[in-house]
Length: 142
View 1 (tube, rainbow, N blue to C red):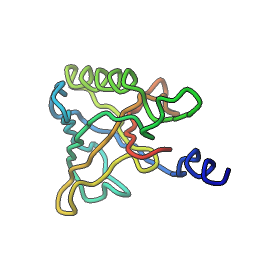
View 2: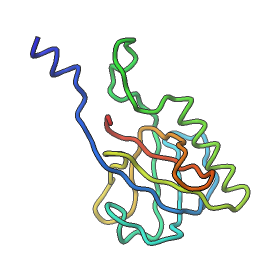
View 3: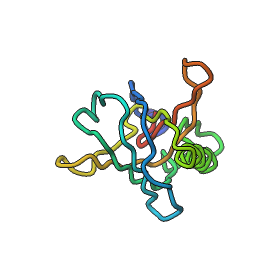
View 4: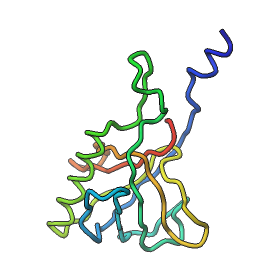
């Protein structure tokens, strides 16, 4: 029973953050999808020092066995990720700013020398600002 309990319990991640950004380029359907953002405010935390970031988005189920009906995962679905990408493309088309961030271990740094990160899914979420939404990146289970 202990072994089953270990494999059924996802690791806990806490924290996250989001920033006001400008989408720098239209996001295509290439795999991985490239999201390019410029910060409209100073980046904090894991993105401190970055004025622009590139996020390489390659959707994956997290955890890998989350397709099982009895496994509950807060990781975004493929459809939720598609909706978030469409939201960002809409902001790009309008030259409007948006909020972008991560939850838990939602961004994985590709190298220590630049501001390129990996993501396995995106989710559009309402935030505590007047009728505003943020796109949150997910990488590890939350």
